[in-house]
View 1 (tube, rainbow, N blue to C red):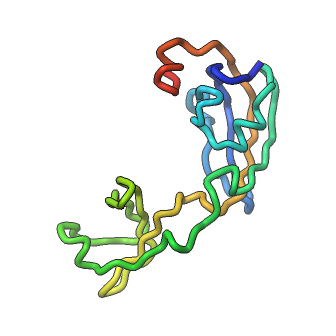
View 2 (view 1 turned 90 degrees about the horizontal axis):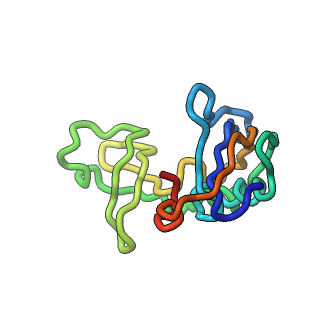
Length: 152
């Protein structure tokens, strides 16, 4: 049974509210995570608690229990010269920025002659996500996995 400190393997697909496929384990190894360690989004982790190997699931997760709401304050315009050394800044590019609380990722959403608009929100912020899948394996986590907080 899925509970804290178990390593869980799932095959899954995830779609957004328009039914667009976001990600899938199809053609890859199942996703393995340490249950209770915050390795996956809270809404999915809560929904999988108590499930058994072989159980199928369909879980819809609202933004607050997924990647959060889209925060307009995380979208900023910066001067294009802040990207000196980058040959050509284009929409969709990601950069690591330095802030008061350390490093974070930003994605370029617009480029003009003078400014670049960057968005520090997670790309899936504000989206309702639906996960479908099956539980493939459940095992006790090793001491090392528990100490490190993730699967090895």
